[in-house]
Length: 271
Image (cartoon, rainbow, N blue to C red; front, side, top):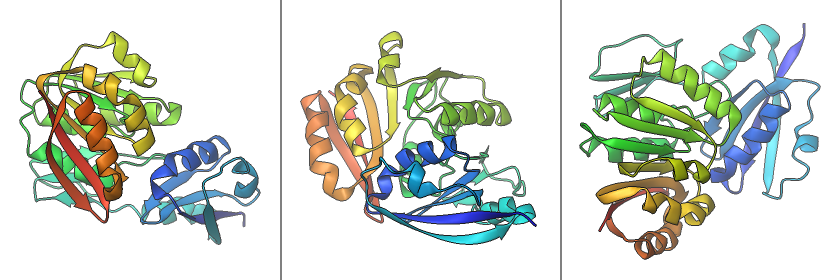
């Protein structure tokens, strides 16, 4: 019987998972699941990740175990559990049972991630839960699976722009928006250059990584209305001074910080 392999990647910089996942997905890997130290990846036995990742300079290690062909997807799925946040939000995949909560989101991440289990997505959601989205406009930069955009609509936002530069993430969020019957989300394939054609908004969400946040901070803040909010995550607590300084240099005022397992989210308001 043919077999699949489960690769357990451990990275010195777990926040850089997206680089690894993008390369491996193009090479034929079938699924990814985040772990605290990196991620799990599933592939047929003839794929060599060390060859695929030969040009990656970020230090990493991986171990391998074999999974029977008919069970590889089940093995992947068993790592993805439904997520309940403050008894208000229930984030599930299509293979999880439906339950009654104020907000139910169905996310099938496929080769993506962003179901809410990772600390950065969780922190973004926690920040959002404390805000008023009713009749607000929102930009979701690096939308990934689209879970934040979906919640923004559920919370009452009427104008949402979801942007992602990765093709498989972009296609995945389109599928998830359809699954959740969203009506107010417009999607865009690209990076910060997309912002040039978009209006300013009241709430700007960016769950990316430190380097991109620093590089694009000016573009982000230019698209926030006076009195509007910027919520960011995707970095460690030790990165806060750099990001706080970059935001303040672009007219933003610090509001709060929340932390989970050293991952951090910051909220700012535009002066």
